[in-house]
Length: 549
Image 1 (tube, rainbow, N blue to C red):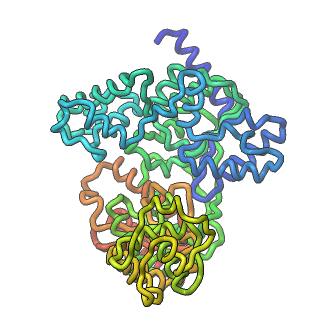
Image 2 (tube, one colour):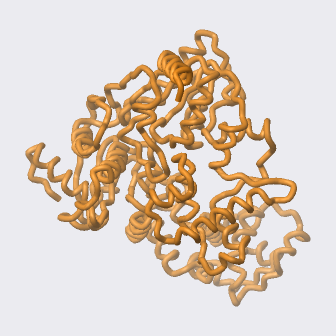
Image 3 (tube, rainbow, N blue to C red):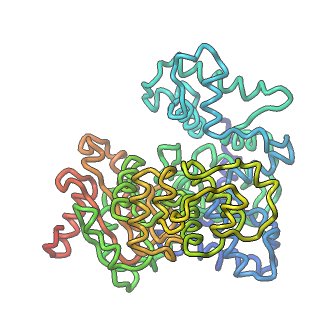
């Protein structure tokens, strides 16, 4: 690099530092509140047009929350006024559509990516490439780290495929994307790469980036490019919650590499002293953490440890619950335990613990057996689950097209118009006798447990329990949180590098700080659980208590 280039780089860094403010917000200190109620509101009051403000985050949920809060804060505006509130990928895609081509029908999801490799090249027929294959994941991470495929292969120490097979898969994948006839295909990484090389972003008054610690080097390249045409930049995040290193995220870009003035939020309103103390014990082992001491709120809360799922106080403690596992296999175990206990729950994508159509069938049969009526859609759904009965005469789905347009159906009407030939006494039978052919025994047992525990009225409401991974609920909070530290995971924790231990602690720190009122540590093995096992012992010792449940 010559002297002229060096001077230009220094001038750019000086300009970035002058117009950038970095907001460090520990858990519950109000990053989103600060961004909306102070930053956004302050600029709009000064006359800044909302359409000249971009708010970028990494999940649609975070963006939707920001839009909702903005609409509440500024009733005179509508959703169109906040059109630049988007995820980073969607923001790049917006200008990609406008300036290059329309990728709506050309977008590749992860399932399609795997299918491409499986079906587009006969040479790979024996490579057993499925959606669980890791090669495209390694390739994607390489791109996000600004590395070549070979460098990424070596860096990840990828041994599932030989280097030749790995490169063959990548070449096949890239060939398919560019050989789509009149159109080409793109993936999520393409959106970012092409935005960097081909898009000229518009000038903005304000750029806000939330959860900045989760950006990859590739994504930071977009931020650097956008920054050239932005008057004011706000970066908000918490390096201690940077838990996406596995995907290429590097919190150092937020803490060290991107210049700016630091602002630190100093008080959490989410939890009190007990949860704060325990979370800080976990945080002690995080290397190179930016200093951001913060105080806790005056909230009554506690931390406890359990060895048995049945001991958890779901009935005693009212409010919302997170039951969190470290990895998907742990989450699957938690779901089975919750079903055995008769808990009503969902995951963070709003998928409930039972088939809602099956639940509708149960409610519909209960209604008509009690002499009530159901609508046409309910009758059709019910028909799906009773048509296999030996006592029924199903006329087929086309029958509904020629049927009189009745608004309501009772037991007799279903028999008369829908060809349902049921014995008279079946009207008095419970749903599990009528619908059992389309229900597995474990499903029936689960429904019965749910009905006994909650009653039908509660099952029609949204569940207050979410079971998922720690990663899935990052940015959310619940009254009560359960952290499931399974067995001796990670099995070789003692042999992990200091960096790996740091990354592991960041995950548990993020999980623990989701709690508002109580934190529950569910551990299958007391001695070999890391880091929570050791951390809980420290917590108990420091607080001078003998409760080691």
